[in-house]
Image (tube, rainbow, N blue to C red; front, side):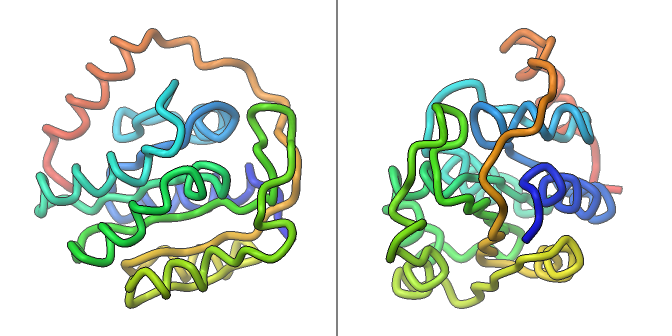
Length: 186
């Protein structure tokens, strides 16, 4: 099984290769994304747990000319399960949700989520109606999976990488990302 930071790096590299805008989940995943692949095309969530998938969907609907990817955590998706049904209902061809499933709330102390027991987010996403749902356990599988649409559940190890905090203000993150959105897709 891969480390979350390895999964984030693989997704970020593919996002760049695809000219995608990338929404990062709150807390440690955004910090890890910033550390391994900072870009004006990345939006780093600093709050609003459970909404990276919804923000990504809204952006995909508003910008059908751009490829959009969202990184969300298992705890965040469990907090906002309705997003899976909405993603299925809207099914934009330019959108991919990547769920980083480490079986815990990684940013708040690694308390277990239901995915470390019986809940299977890939099956839940399929049940919500998302037509294309894949799982990945290695960086190579993940790189292949993120070339599609729908959702990918990346199974990752528990634990946060030791990375610095994001040294941008929320306004700087917003402004950089808006500039990144305005640029044409490469």
